[in-house]
Amino acid sequence: MRRTFSAIPRAGICKRMSTLNIYCNAHFPESAARILREGIGANRLILSQKPQESNLVAGGPDPLLAEADIALGQPDAASITLHPRLRWVHLTTAGYDRYDRPDVRAALHARGGALTTSSGVYDEPCAQHALSLIMAQARQLPAALKSGLTDRSWPIKELRGRSRLLGGQTVLILGFGSIARRLAQYLKPLGTKVIAVRRTVRGDEPVETFPETQVNELLQQADHVVNILPGGAATERYFTSARFALMKPSAVFYNIGRGSTVDQTALAEALASSRIAAAYLDVTTPEPLPPDHPLWAAPNCYITPHTAGGHDTEFNRLAQHFVANLKRWEQGEGLENKVV
Image (spheres, rainbow, N blue to C red):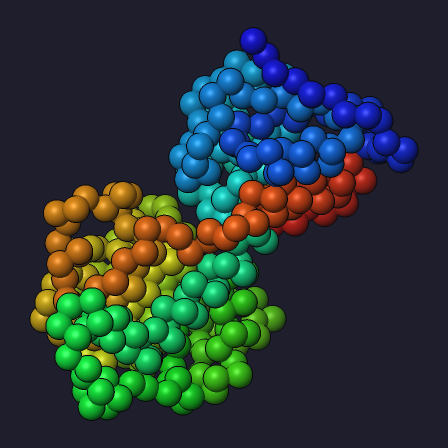
């Protein structure tokens, strides 16, 4: 049975049309669902019969999508091209790899439509997660915690000698979007030199930013390499054995972008040979990472289970972000986090 919801009309609603059909296949807890229901006003909410428990997983084809003007969540990418009524897709993720397709882009362009993400929800937690990993390495927290959980040997001299101050160290960020901007803001008071690489340098970046053609040179200078690259064919196994070989033996690699951007065999070998000092991974391929995968046993490799974007108000903020963007759509204003 179809589930729909019509809210009480509000004054001053929708300049574009009287009622919008909003399809949602995201599984929101009740607090977030209430924000969504109250926020859509007089518009009609169409709930998928198979909501996605995780916003990291795409939904399958759904006949209800044919009724939608707007889709919220993770709708089936191929289906977006089939339904001419659908004009705006708002994703509940910061990434949009599976939708970065010529057919999806062409379909939305032909309709004067749009694709937006929820990167505004995830820039803060992901930047804080990355900062915590950088500081954990600088202060040797993993080694201290390991000692406390195993031999309890109190390695004071060793760990004090290996601890570092971040002031004067160089952090290289690959993929300079909203997460990178926030991370750069966090690092600045620590006296860290932050440089970045992005495909197209705009000139308005708050840190010194270089084109991708200079990445190999920059890798040789960095003490910390933070990978926030998106997935896709252009970044598949971007970090190869050759690129790890360019890094300082004392350098640390962090990945909070996509697991597909790293040759994980090459990374495990770089760690085993002490080609680099350590790696902190929040994303891998596949996910979950199998228990017998070599990265689990690689020396100085620390893995968090794709939790960088997670926070206790995540779903409420996702709903609020969509509602705010919906008001812009209704008023004919520019959308936040638009990629198409």
